[in-house]
Image (spheres, rainbow, N blue to C red):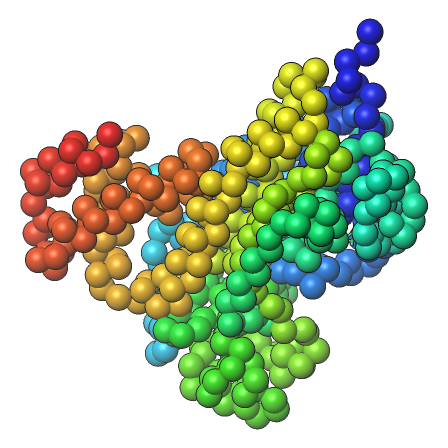
Length: 446
Ligand SMILES: Cc1cc2nc3c(=O)[nH]c(=O)nc-3n(C[C@H](O)[C@H](O)[C@H](O)COP(=O)(O)OP(=O)(O)OC[C@H]3O[C@@H](n4cnc5c(N)ncnc54)[C@H](O)[C@@H]3O)c2cc1C
């Protein structure tokens, strides 16, 4: 006899990063999957649009773990550029590399959003159970008749992987009377581009994430396999130095000459890029509930969009897919229980990474410049060597480990107190009282 869950076909709205990966997980469990995607097929476009989102992304351990689970990581690996640390550019153009981790394998990877999405779509279709329907924009859901609107496409089980402005989320919240909290950051972003060097190659250090931290705002750059860098300017929306104030090419160049002078020769299309590319909006989205009865669920950015400063939105969405797959282990479990279990497991963790991502903006644009930051980073690495597996710098717990985000946040707060206490009177790591450090770690980090 068939179990209740062998039969349902799953309809996913959104064939972005989460939707394409989730389709593979579901197909492996025997489900037929239909993906409804509003874009045209990006694999058939010469220069696929990045759907208004970043052109490249940082992929880290959580994302990699999920990609490995479905066996696509080998294909992805060829497309990756390792980034070993943050390359800081100060206002005089001096460079300083701050490594991300303490061990050679502790690196993050720059990957093309379009390339990764195409690879996942191909892998999903290759299962033979997944059909992607392009040019289909979902606007609502008729939960009474189990239909997606306006297409009138019937569904058995519906999952919204339709990103931060999710239509499926809106339908669930309307039906359940749920809550939506959209917290704008007050800062936006603009993508710019550094072309490859003449004759190929990179115009800056290839294996780093470049940052120009300027206190209230910053510029960053991630490498692409063709030798170019995608540059992102993060700036307040309003104020003296803001997107609102940059209304002419002269104003843009004046800001760059004042604050990012060493980047100007690298950005031959600065003026054009600035006015041709849209200004992106940044916010944290929290909503409840994530599901409606046994009909529908949201996952990825549709459930929990976060600001991009920890490079974890996609990684968290991929971890969602893997966590959801584990909720499907018992084939007889009803879908409402599966949805509830998923939300119970994931919400504390996605709330935690939302907070940590906001904190990381301040670290990247400001704190990273302070001598105390470097001292605490050096000390954290030394403590990790003395207490492996017990004291792990918070950045490493988030990026290089897969322990739950909420646990990384909890342990990170204790560690921060320890680091503050140990460095309150130390100017260098050599001046730190390591006997006291060992005692504090033994007492507080169980
Ligand atoms: C500037 C920036 C930089 C970032 N950098 C990083 C990073 O370095 N590392 C990282 O891990 N994350 C990063 N992120 C976050 C990451 O982009 C998201 O977390 C990730 O894309 C979420 O995947 P998703 O599939 O849930 O949503 P999306 O990638 O937004 O995919 C949603 C899909 O649904 C489709 N869709 C939307 N609405 C509908 C509809 N109504 N009907 C049909 N289809 C629809 C869209 O076309 C799209 O294909 C960054 C985000 C930004 C904005």
